[in-house]
Length: 426
Image 1 (tube, rainbow, N blue to C red):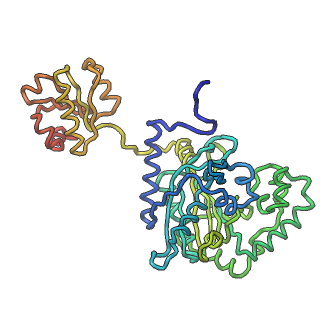
Image 2: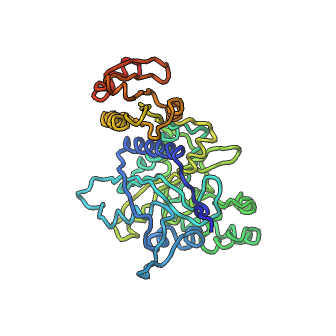
Image 3: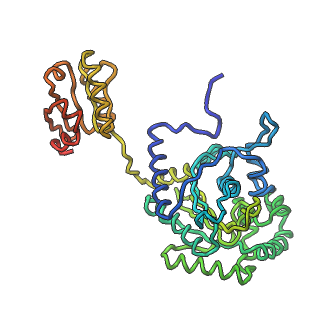
């Protein structure tokens, strides 16, 4: 048997992981500006955490969950999304307690798992970055969180981004619209896709979100949920739109957008961008004021979003965005002869202790081959170290870009390499 990675997974090799690290760090810096702190939850949860929160009739639960019974006969699932685990943790750890500062702002990063057909930017093990804000029903929280995502995309360099906005209203508004949608779609049932025929019975709002051609045609003239919002829901949505406008965050209303999970209410949104003629969703989320209560906590308003890392990296690549990755070494030690082996080890470690990224030759290669390695590692400087340099306590340090050289004391390199770099204009 040839050992290979499972279908729908990937190995993230060093040349790619640098991009992942940059993206993660960029997100951390953005979220810190908005006072978010990181939370890390297990990659597997009890089945009920996901099935009850995202909805028993969702495609995630009916088709895509990686669930199994463990050796203790507990029903376990690999997490398919990030919100439900964070809400479970929020309740279990009593982050709603009076002594905890409100609102509670959390972000997460990590692997998610869904059994679906692998495609561009979507794998069976995929990675998400997400945020969740608990404790504020203020529409300013909706606008601020959406603006944070908009700032992230703008500053990282993603272009042609469109914010699509909608409201699902409160429970009463949603119930009224659900019935109106059933009345509209029932005569068209035979023209719908098989999945949407099922959804019509289980959750008709999801028919609006279908990507199938026949479903798109059927819902083209469907009633708008915005016509069914009660006064409270209208006021909340109007406030969100007004605040986004005051923050210069443009948006378009998309009444067919409903999101794929059961727990949303009021504001929902997606950020999309065009890649090679295809519209890709790069961020999605909304308000979910009933989920904390559903998990046994107190009634708590909440708002959040998720971003797929694979898809973000795909968009960055397709749009030609060059990430300013910090790659390369500060110094490479070219080692001449076995007699210099111990001193080379001491020297490279001294440089690292000073905070520099350094590497040395371990393979006793010819000098020309070592210089090629220095170029491959994009080393800023090269230090040549052999038996004669050790005896004289003098080494040659070369600026690998300008080719300028300077001879300095070996002890100076070991104690204050920054001063040596100053002599080379580095």
